[in-house]
Amino acid sequence: MSRLSHSEIHMVRRIGWLRAAVLGANDGIVSTASLVVGVAAAGSARSAVLVAGLAGLVAGAMSMAAGEYVSVSSQADAEKADIARESRELRDTPDAELDELTHIYMERGLDRELARQVATQLTERDALVAHARDELGISEMVAANPAQAAIVSALTFAAGAVFPLIVALLAPASWITLAVAMTTLAALATLGGLGASAGGAGIIKGASRVTFWGALAMIATAAVGRIFGVAV
Ligand SMILES: [Zn+2]
Image (cartoon, rainbow, N blue to C red; front, side, top):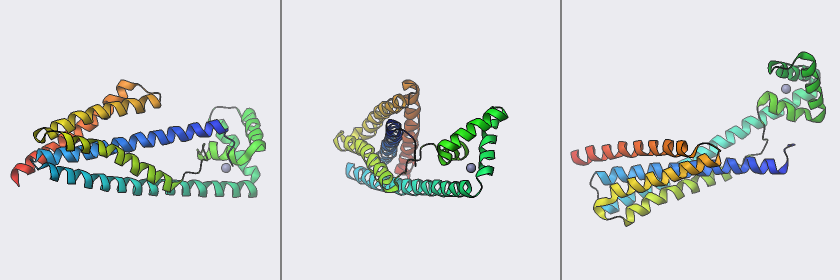
């Protein structure tokens, strides 16, 4: 169905997966580190901190998987339905569809004659691809696999979540909060920089954005831990 070249498809997939992997790992680190910091700040024993962190890992990974599965399948369903409707319209009312495409190119700044020419040539080449891209905004037509997306999100979340857990396991008991917070910020800065450079954006900007939100999350849970740890 797609006219994208092989290398283009790989590019699209690679950037998509890389971005998803970085986001998943990021989520895993931030939420588990915040959980660990919150529980540790309440003065809990290491075992309680680790149980909370491990439960957070499992809960987060499952919720990422479920969310990703639902979002990818509903997006795929919607795109499939759009494409099916479009190909029905192309079969039943080809003239109206050609007019429609012409208008789309006119709205983008071509004059009527040129828009007509472009629409006609693209329709001859592959009408469905032209309508999918320029009318529906579906440029990739790469069938997303919901189960695969769910597994990737869960695994990358877990991989990120393991990191603060290991630090909580190895750090001296009275230093858990500080050790987790510091190593988490360092890991987030690295991931943020990696993600930004993969996306072609500024490394410093990407790193500081992620680090800022991570720090905010840990400050919030540390405050909760302090307040309720003392009160309860
Ligand atoms: Zn159309």
